[in-house]
Image (tube, rainbow, N blue to C red; front, side, top):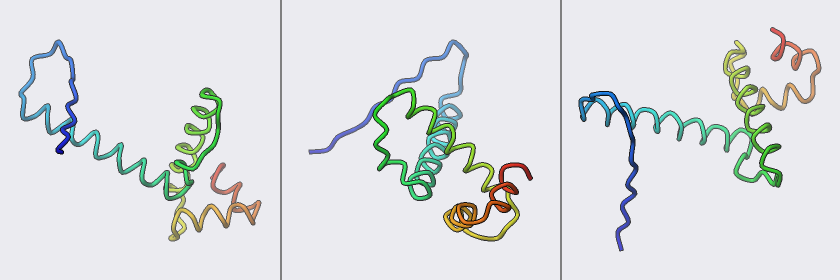
Length: 98
């Protein structure tokens, strides 16, 4: 059995179909890539936060931390930076405050 996922997009703008398809694919590529990084780095899929509002807040916090980790100049993986920040308050402050 083959399943085809069909997404629908609405716009009042006149669009070139090929350009619109490219834009949608690029958007979802970025979304999927970010989701993968969040899951690998923070094990986001294993989160057991039951309250929807708290889950949204935690997801936002994870994205902020991910951006801060990416901006930090240390040449190390994100999980390594997280462990170092957990063990070292000065490093943690450096990540958050520069």
